[in-house]
Image: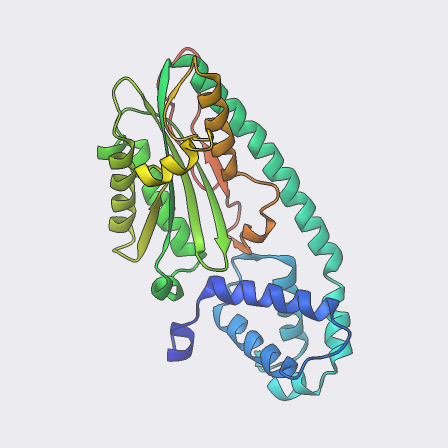
Length: 307
């Protein structure tokens, strides 16, 4: 790995490419730095490209531009500079229908996952008198994101899921869980995690959330960090508006139950297309829950991130 490639942020590169392609398609004329930005992005993409991965439609548009203008397998900068804005725009425009299909598929999948999550939560809530709901967001420090590609992200999440499956330490007495993988401009690759404990045996939600974040930091060797949604300050903000959906949730309190389901539904939001993964491993899942069995009080294992 050369020094240039070493400090590329894979997540940021892919988002920059998507934004560049969108701007090119919708613009009437080339902007002053158009060709310079294009060359930089093509070089960055060439550096991080992996044949084993599946990329989003607009990243594929840039990849096609590379292959059509390659010289000995490298980006031919001179040839790219000689392309007119209109030529580049027309090439990108061919991928617009693929992008539209991609967004519709994302919306359908997120809607399906949201219904699945609500059904899962309903089963758990109907079975237990009270449950302790915990939400944490797990990501990577900004100055470490250049070290994290989708392979590393999956590895770290799978290790965390393994600890959850084993009921290790802070995951003892866990009755349910859900996770969602996303990619954003600021956080890069990140995971939204929901943990649901038996409220009769666990009460310290703030502590358990912090312990989960510490476990994430151990897994990522301190490259990761987390946001605790169960701090007293955070909960008080929602308590003031009668919308608190984390902490102890009692089955016979309709408001608490409704708030919990609404809060948890944030994990799978069809409107968050700007947070979808721009790159995936083969058969990679971006959402999962535990399995609920009516005749079995405990969740029955955790599905892998791959099919």
